[in-house]
View 1 (cartoon, rainbow, N blue to C red):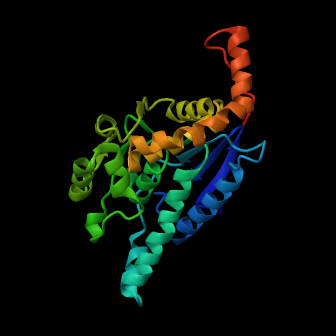
View 2 (cartoon, rainbow, N blue to C red):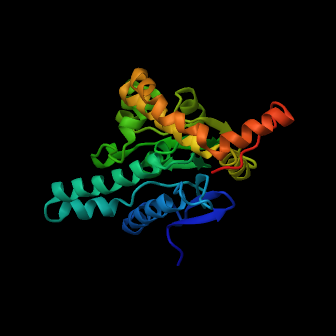
Length: 270
């Protein structure tokens, strides 16, 4: 049997595939695979590697992205010894995965083609860009088992949509269509159902073809601005953006711009 979560390489894009039929539930094996995939992505996107992946795309196989977590996993923790300690250890593991995805030095894209619940939705919120098909829907439905989402969902929803919207979504446990979450700035783009997978791949390849080192700087500055304020990001601009002038990306793009004109700049760096 194949891993429930694995990486496939598509040119400059590392494609993370969730494939745990029939509902792509997150169980013990999937959580283990998440940790392994996160570690592999750190290596695959290492700036020191000239052949590194320049973007990451997360996609799922089957009719749904994920029906959520296998609830027997929570039952085993709750009914076993030291449930509070073991529960805390689980959340620490999963938050480390979420943080690793968020901190990757390349653009990360999550493609949601259908129902996306709980852990899958939280993983999506750890990615830079969330693309959704028209029929996709999302939910953090942990209230049905007496939990709050704890893989970063509340705080990352609050970053994107504001705290009131985050609490509304989690308090109700409702499923929200892609169009609503696009209005709330949770989903970046809603794309047609037909050809969605191909469009998501094309988007990932487009960002992979950009100036990778500059994209990493963008991620750093945006994250600092959200969590520490715009002035804190301003203070770090010289340190983060100054070195861009020493990259092959910038030198090649400037030369291309000057020789070929606007709109035709190319990037030859990493």
